[in-house]
Structures are given as C-alpha cells and as structure tokens.
Length: 236
Image (cartoon, rainbow, N blue to C red; front, side):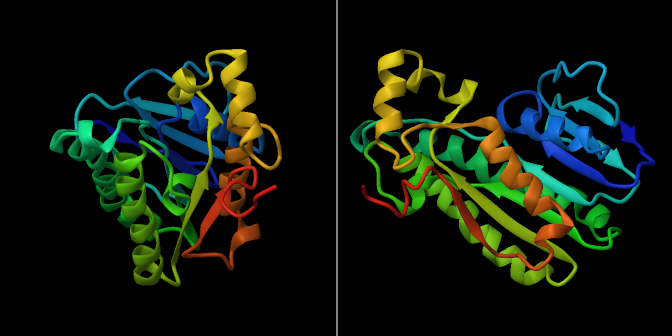
C-alpha cells in the first residue's frame, strides 16, 4: 500500500478528480494555493499545477496518508436510467457499491486524518432526483437518498469537529451525462426544464463544494444543498 505524505497548509482529498466536477474543484482549490490529493482510477492529466498530487486507485485499498486532511470530497457517481420493470438486483447493488459504500470506505479510511484538522469538512453528492421524483431514476434515487441520510447521520456524530454536507445537483455538463446531452436538441430540452433555462456546468457545482470546504461555511453542517437551476423548488 503506498504512503503519501504532504506538508502544505490546507489539504483536500478528492476522490474522482480525474474529470468533471472533481477536476473542476481541484483546479479551483489549487488556484487558491490549497493542496489537493486526488484519488481516482485514471490519471487526472492535470499537468503543471502546483499543490496537486494524485494516486491511481488500482484496488479497494486507499493510500495511507500520514498528515492532517482538512476536507474530503467524494465525487464518483452513476446515471443508470432504466424503467423499474427492467432493473435487476445487481443494478441496485452496483449503484449502492459505487455511490454509498465507496463513500463510506473513504470516510472510514481517512477519519483519523480529518481528526487532526482544526475544523474539517466532508462534501458528498446526491441528486435532484431524490427530492423530485423522476421517471427511470429508481437506482439513482435509492443510492443517493442513502447518501443524504448518511450526510445527516455523520454530521450529528462527527460534530463539532468535522462538518458534513451534501450537494444535490441537477443535470450537469460532464462526461457522465454525455448520453443525455450529446445533441443540441437534447441540451435545449434539458435547459428548458430548469427555471434558469440552462443546464449546469462543472464549475457551478465545484464552486458550491469549495464554499462547503472553506471557513466561510464554518456554521453549516448536515445540509443537503440543491444546486439545480431551481428545478427542485420552482415551477415557472
């Protein structure tokens, strides 16, 4: 098992910084001279960026980190859209393994490092589909609903030392959502379903995550924050 040791003032561990929201967040944090450790299954290909270090996860073992970690962001997710009648047990298990058990394993692995920080923050990701019922989103809603429950349970258990919050985005322009937005017509249709008349981009979500990691949100914990273009609360 590799050992990773870093000596920068503030350190955030991002699981899944090789693309999408995780990569956008890594670039935002490092541009503010914060240290980022990326753990992902592929090389993030972020070259020439100071304070950025990565470990490619080849199995279920996370690298050993000896120093304090000030923040953990767990980004992996799935969009497995099928009619309920077509779903198998394994579909639900696959989504739970990636979205929920993966987050749990990560947090358990690095809780000792978070405890070394003065005020640590964990950021998880849900989806607008938990609060707003949507066709074909059964497996997504089940697994991300569990994440929302985990957020509140851990926020209570870890307080006051470690804050835990969750972001629930709507459709966002990332590789994960490519099949849903791979034509101009699909983008327009999806945009029109949102009160703000556009779909989100990775920076929209990453900026919210940066806030939840920062001292500016030091009195925020146990929250599910909807960054969804108004979809979950507005009808216009």
